[in-house]
Amino acid sequence: MSLNIEIQTVMDFDQFKEFNFFHYTKKKKMIYYLSIFSFSTFFCIFSTPALLGFAIILSIILIRSFKKIAIAKYWHSSNLSKKCNYFYHLDGNKFFMESYGSSQSLPKSQYECNWNDFICIDETPDCFYFYSSIMEAFILPKKDFAIGNDTQLTKFLKEKLSLKYKCWSS
Image 1 (spheres, rainbow, N blue to C red):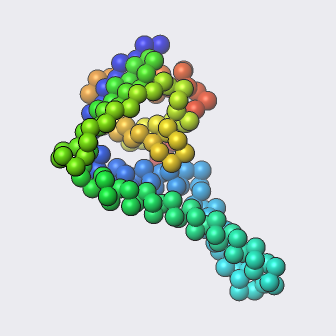
Image 2 (image 1 turned 135 degrees about the vertical axis):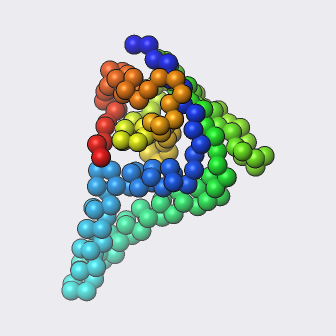
Image 3 (image 1 turned 90 degrees about the horizontal axis):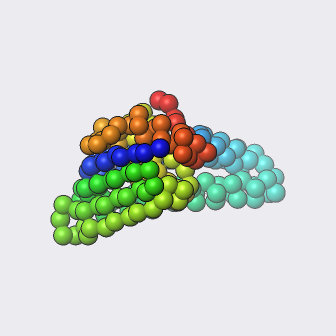
């Protein structure tokens, strides 16, 4: 299937916050973590030493998860607080991204890959998230399509990458 899509967008703090919220709540991960925390707290108060050890281990797992969120927030505050411009070109074979900052402090960068290099692709009502690793994704807002549209991209993803693609309704 042929595909020719171009997207030009500016990444700002709000888009990054939406991505973090989506990433940590998809598949209800936060509910599991809060359940573990509640369970651990209960056993810390009303348990034997063996159960207390179990509760401490579960709490450490929870803290490590929040540490990942804190690292992402630090990265954002140090780099993305200066708005960054992104240009995406998507065709039937390749995904291409070019970023350039609005000032000298953000250097120009490029990224190109094959479609199969993504570990998963999520679609929300507002954006597409193309995951290149577990914690890193390219954010493509649907409102910023310059050539093509989100319907064409959705059809392409369903046909070419059906096992990696998931649509999350509101």
